[in-house]
Length: 50
Image (cartoon, rainbow, N blue to C red; front, side, top):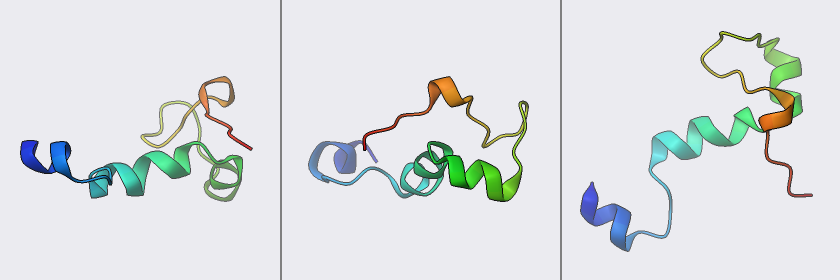
């Protein structure tokens, strides 16, 4: 794992699958996430690039 973190340009699979959706408002609308849910991220903490 340490070697892959150093040489692979991609983030680990678990992070690619779980972190990205947390920043999408549509994800929270569809799944009706609430504070306390594992995938919930407060709107002010979400990263918006475009």
